[in-house]
Amino acid sequence: MKNKSRVCDGPYRAVLTATGAAVPKRILSNADLSSMVETSDEWITTRTGIKNRRIAMDSETTSSLSTDAARIAMETVGLSAKDLDLIIVATVTPEMVFPSTACFVQDSLGASNAWAFDLNAACSGFIYALTLGERLVSSGAHRNVLIIGAETLSRITDYTDRTSCILFGDGAGAAILQQADRNSKAGVLYSRMAADGGGWAPLHCEAYGSRYPSTRPLDDPRKIYMTINGREVYQLAVRRIVEVVEEALADSEMSLDDIDLIIPHQMNARIIESAAKRLNLPDEKIYVNIADYGNTSAASIPIALDECCRNGRIRPGSTVILVSFGAGLTWGANIVRF
Image 1 (cartoon, rainbow, N blue to C red):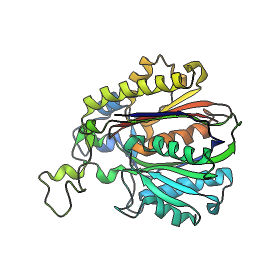
Image 2: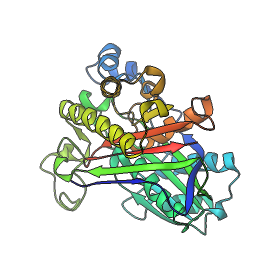
Image 3: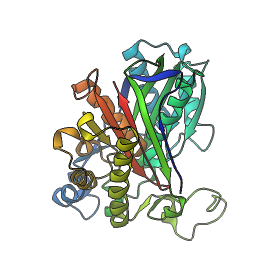
């Protein structure tokens, strides 16, 4: 396992100038789930903090949700599709095996000058993508980069397994990174990424890939669905979230007093509460919206980020930590000043 961190100090500053989000209209409530599997609103809420999750209709796909979120972000800052240099889509539920979801988004937007690719880092995907985008913008290679986290997790959820089907929802969030003078106070100030491939077993989806190809019958048909060991993931997530936040602050020579808000990946409200308690973080400094959307993997941070930008939790001058932990295992954090 290797950790990669960087206090961002290139010839330019990569500024996060706009956000957007798109979620399906269809709502799957705890009451709905209780008619599908043996569960209840009280059981789900107590263990996860989730009340509702959004579920894509047949006509809604990862690329369509991505495109909708991207258009909102671009309209917010008045950016033309032709001005985009790069599109990165972070997802574990792509439009298809290939080509990339980002290529479908590029075509839908008419962003003919942008190159495009997908990134798979599970729930840490948006953190990873934002870090890559920052590198390209701050180096001077690009001026306008579109970062998207998008998922249709309902497509790989086993709705007969009450321990996992209660968790996941669909949606997309987008952010625009733009080049600014290096003396700009706003921008992505710091990034840290980490991975531990030996820890993949507690959280994964095995089929269909080269290990379990579609050409060979599965020994367990449920391999097409996500698998999660909740107890093990809980312990790992809390520890890694606390560690990476503390490392980010130390590397940046900051304290929690310098941070206005922390937006964590919305994987489980109890995990977020435990991490906040270990960090001695007051409630007003952490944002939680999992009750409304469930765990949307790579989409959760950008959806929450967009809400915060639009509801006043993030204002010009706000300093925010984005932090995630997910399958891989992967985890990381960005410090962003608006």
